[in-house]
Image (cartoon, rainbow, N blue to C red; front, side, top):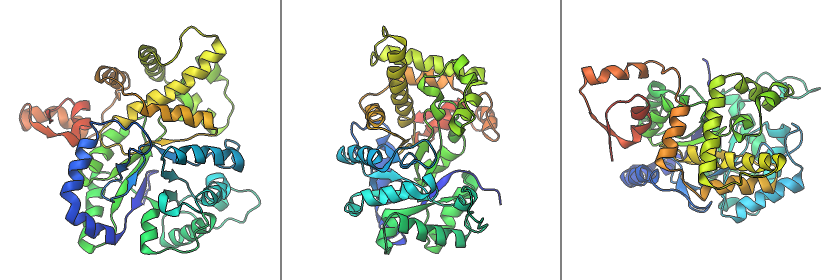
Length: 398
């Protein structure tokens, strides 16, 4: 079975009993939350149906550790952790393979006396033995099968310095599954889980940015229907949308992973037009000085573009907590400023138009026929606003 790169959260069976009684209330909260803007990390939001309250920005820990050459040492990473936590942050994302295990080990030490105060999401599926030199390959240490799940979860708990796990602790320190997730499969999986009394998916972690809006066609509507929270990553498209790259500099980037991705983005002319609109909107907000020397301007714009892109993602329907990453305290400070302002509807519309996907996949491409076969101006629930807007069908129920 082909597996996507999207990650899913498991919730407790015990908590699902609570959900059955509280579902109408939770839905009411979830459907109105998109009209408000969080101002701080302690303006907590609900993660799907789980009942978990998490910060509106999730701190990723791929930069905790130096094994991959993109992160920071333990002391510097601790400063980033402390700032996020002191501001009220409680939601952390890590993985079994981040910096060959350093990401989980660092995080485990940082939260050793804060376990009940934080929500930690970790991932498995990646085979850590295939990513390290001079290590014998274990073909069963990767993948989504049961052996991989159990062994990786046990190893993650050791690295996170969590030697025991109760059903309640599974709620707090859950693992993310990778699975095929589109409208048909997700409906079947969660319905089957509910009928059997099993744990259902409560959250989706997936790529989402102005350069890649594929989420809006199947995943976002499915999550809206199932009350599944969305934790998007890649808001700045590996750094392309930070504004620090030019056509000339992008063409001369090194072969390192992130640089390679930026080089790929730079080959698409439409992406530069999207970036131009980002720059225009950034100037309109008045949040950065325009008349500055080139080096300073690059640094300031780079910081604000991250804020702007994260802000755009935050305002999209169904988004729970965008993932942010920071190697330094300064970078984290600038990311957190995305909570301080809200783009106007007109600015969001312009960014939407500039980044509108060139092709709409089937069956969404058939929506243009709905007026003929279903009726014109049919009312559409607000939770499906994204697909209704992108396909220009119906009117939104406000």
